[in-house]
Structure formats: C-alpha cells, structure tokens
Amino acid sequence: MEELEREYLISYYDKRVGFLGETPAALGWSEKGQLARYEAALRFFADWSAAACSQGSCPEGSPLDGASIADYGCGMGDFYGFLLRKGISGINYSGFDINPGLISIARARYSGKSGNQRVFFDVLDIDGRDGGGLPGFYDYSLICGVFNQRVEGASESAKRCIEKMWSRTGKVLVFDALSCNQKEKDAALEYCSPEEMLEFAAVKIPGARASLHEGLVEGGLTLCLSRK
Image 1 (cartoon, rainbow, N blue to C red):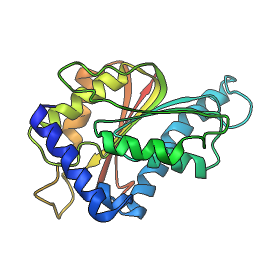
Image 2: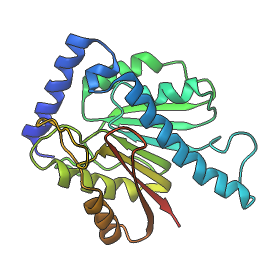
Image 3: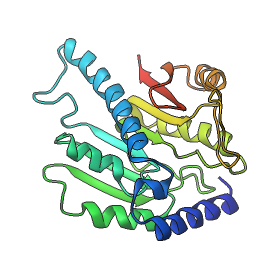
C-alpha cells in the first residue's frame, strides 16, 4: 500500500472513532454484521481442527486449544474479544493493524485479560515498502474487512496480503470482503469478484485448497484457504 493511501486510512478511522466511539460502527460494521463474519471465520477454523481430530491428531479439550491465530487488520481487537466471549481458551493470539491508535485501544482493552492465553497487538503494514513481514508462523489467519474502503490499488494490495499471510499460515486462512454481486453498492467501498478471487488463488497459491463462499454474510464474500 502506498504511503498516501495508508495515511488516508489511518486518518479516516481515527476520525470515525472520535465521532462514533470505540464501536463496530466506527470501523464500518454493524454489530450483527461483525458478529456474523466472526462466526463464519471461527467455523472454518473449527472445521479444519475437527477434521484433524477425526484423524487422531486433536489435543485434549477444544480443537482450538493451543492454536496460534493471526488477525491482520485487527482494529480494536474485536475478534479477540469475540473469542474470549466464546470461552475459547489456551490460544496464542496476535493482532496487527496499520493504525497505531486502534492498536492502542486494543492493548488497553485486553491487557491483563488473557488468562492462560498469550495475546499480542502490534502496528504492522504487511504491504508496506519495508516488506512488513509477520513476526512468526500461525495455525490460523484472518483478514476481515481490511480492504473494504476504496483506495488506489486496494485489490492488488489485498492479493499481496493474502499471499504473504498464507506463507506464514499452517492450517487455514480466511479472507472476508464485499462481493461485487450485491445489487446495491457504495461508491466509497471496494468490491471483490468471486471468480477473480478463485482464479487468483489457483494461480498464486497452488498449494492451497480454496473455497469461495457468498451469502454467509449479507453482501459478503469469504475466501477460505486451507492446507491439503
């Protein structure tokens, strides 16, 4: 992502938080829509774990116990809060965002609340000029709504982000965006073509099992990449 677009997005969301407070609406979500996206991502993670369990490689307890999760574009840490409310324990969670203000909020919200979990938040632009490499490897990765705002080069930036995240993901990566197939569109938002995303996955990520889902969330598109 170019510096101008990056600074625009940081300023845009800082202003929305200033006006709307620390709410899903400040990040462009309804509470219902945000929850539906998180539920969908968790199902993809759990389905992979359940399949592994059926082959005798499941740890005791929840299938996600001991798993590491990377959340790119974590905002204020809402997905981590969702996992806590679900009672999922023993995970190692890492949240990354290009916006320092949002990361500060996430840290303030969840510092000291991790119990037996490891929780980590940091500022990172994975598509920045410095390369923005992730500082580790993860079982599961989530990129949820990160590229919904229409800025120059958003589509190509999203694809580069998926490639980089996949290279550090051991089991499942879930990418959530807006589908171009919805009837009503907002000129300020970016929409993805399901066909284009599947073709991208086939060409650029040949080692993945790719599935494309529409309708899990109204107007949404979910690309799930899993290890074969």
